[in-house]
Image 1 (cartoon, rainbow, N blue to C red):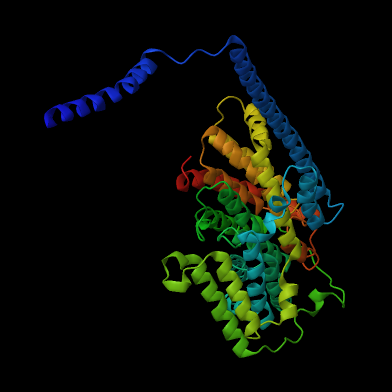
Image 2: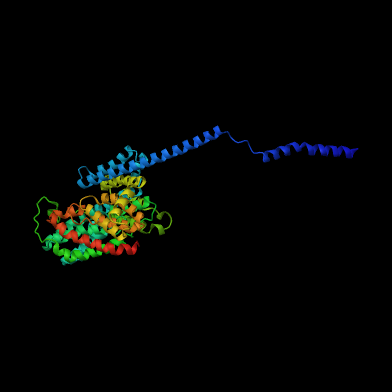
Length: 493
């Protein structure tokens, strides 16, 4: 009896799943009923609408990109015009650039004013203050006096000594400040020795420009090209890497200025007005605090060491360049080496705003394709597959010509993004082409307005416009030849 009951229960359990199994089998055998033709048409229409919307959006994006590129190129042209003519101040022109790009919806407000927080802008400001401390405490003048004293009674020896100290100081300090400090010393010695001051002052100004090519902080164009490389996510130049190109150029420039260039400088007598600064060059000197001189010297040495070897230093000493510069500036003020107001005055705000204002233009040229458009046009003019050496030559002369009449920072900021786009379009080394642009921007030798040191020696040296042309143009040619040799060696194309 129990067996029968168990058998009945088992059969009931098995048969209870049979309808479910059959139903599942039916689902597998019989597919889901097909959608109707009307539903299929609706789906196809929806897909077509999505594709059309995507195409319209893509077309709108392409049109906006093209419009933004045209606006960027117009802004670039206007900026170049006002930089060259200086109808309005350089800083005003530069800061107008991001404002126009923002109002034209090419950049957002954050993108437009991102240059003000750029690390290179902070580096500029910090080094202006640190450099000013050397001038304020008399350290820079003291160094100049020592070098000039070593030269003895030789005019050529004095010229070499002046150029050496000018180049070394301007490698880490302002070339304008360096020239201003050495100017009265050179004039006083030339007057007392009866030498032609022009043959000392012209090399002084030109050597100050050459010295800026030796380090990253020597001159703003070096920082500009580094900023462009950073924005593009490419390897930046090291602190002393510029000396690989700037060193040979400087040595060749020295050789020229002590020989052929020396003969090209006019032997023109100079008569100074009683009220002119040059006439008072050998008057009494200001007495400086020895303690402040020591402190300022330690600060600049420390900052340069951290900038040059920071990546290999331990602990907190391993810091970015702009942090080292800012720290040095803060210590200068906190120790009383330079006053707060003096620190504010030491900062060249034109350079700060010029750099900060033009960086967004570089960003816009990259994001809108404007830089690529110019690059394609330049490459097209040079023929198919132009040689990187041809590109380097063209960029050198374009940059060096512009920098004779406009700020070297402005000319570099205008051309560096274009050069980067050209380098990428032909597969050349960006570093090789950009180092040429940076050095060429420092070759403002052929006019008295190309760079402040040239202007500083104009009156005291009794120079005329064509004096700069006679000496400066051959020097530019020498720099070009040297660069075309060394650049491909250290930065293979």
